[in-house]
Structures are given as structure tokens and as C-alpha cells.
Image (cartoon, rainbow, N blue to C red; front, side, top):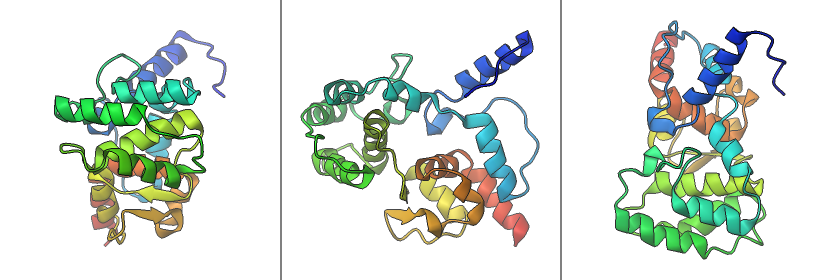
Length: 212
């Protein structure tokens, strides 16, 4: 719960943070200068300060019924009614075909994110132009609506995959148990670890180099 905002500066800070954490991984870096992050603990602290709460999660949580959730995700639109940045380069026909497949998903029997991810992957993973990142994004957005965000495993794709490599983690699997990551990251939920790996992939490379 947010603390009571007593000053104009407090309210301005929250508005600025909300603007910073609305967009997708590729363009959601803070424009504010920040000091170099020298340890993994500092990276985690920076993520919590700069990126929580995640606005896309709150946006999709507001669409709880399966039909509302599926229709929203199939539209590829964020809370500003813009195409999510991850999907701006996905061909229009691929988005159309995948959107139709998403609307027809049966999610009533989904037990957890692992089930949801497999369901999405089967439905859209083979569509030309749809890659691992879009499959994960679709599953995560649906998971936010259905209360089934990743809780047990961290999924690796695109920037998150680079971040995991920077940590020296074995990335031979599509997803890894939370326990496979350094203990500093265990303060975060599995989906937040994926988020951090993507946002701070460059810092993680430098942190590992400094520790070597």
C-alpha cells in the first residue's frame, strides 16, 4: 500500500515513477541519471525502487473474466491504448492470426502459469513472426488477469536470457526454478526476476565483471 502523499514533491515522484514503469522491457529504462550499481544487491534495490509496482500488471488485473482478459491481450494494447513495444515489430498478419488464436483459448482449466504458458505456446508459438518473447508476454499478461503470474520458474527469452547469461546462470533450459538464481534475487517473485534480468541486463554484466 502506498504511503500517504503529503507534499507536491511526493505526488510528482509517484507520477514520474508511474510513467517510467508502464512500457515494455525494451524501452522502460529510467531516463533519470543514477549512480553505478556495483553489486547484485544494489541492482535488486534499484529494481524495487524504480520499477515496482508494475503498471502493466495492474492494468491486466483489472480484466478478470476470461473473455475480457483474452480480448484485451489479443488486442496487443497497453493501458495507453498503444501497441506494446515488444510487439511493434511483429508483422501485422502475425498479430492478427495470433490474436484470433488467443481469443479462442480455453483457460477455464488452467491451474498455474506453467499450464498457461504451454497453452499459449501451442496456440501461437508456431505462427510465423511469433517468437519466444511474444509467447511469454501473452502468457504473462493473461496470467496477470487470471491471478496466475509465474511463481515457481523464471522464463528466459530476449533480454531476460541475456541477463541470466550475464549472471553466469545455466541457460540451457527454457525456464529455471527460482532457486537456480543467486539468493539476492529471492526477494522477488519469479516474474519479477525475469523483469529484472531484462531491465538490468547490462548492469548485471558489469556487476559480474567487477566481482570476478
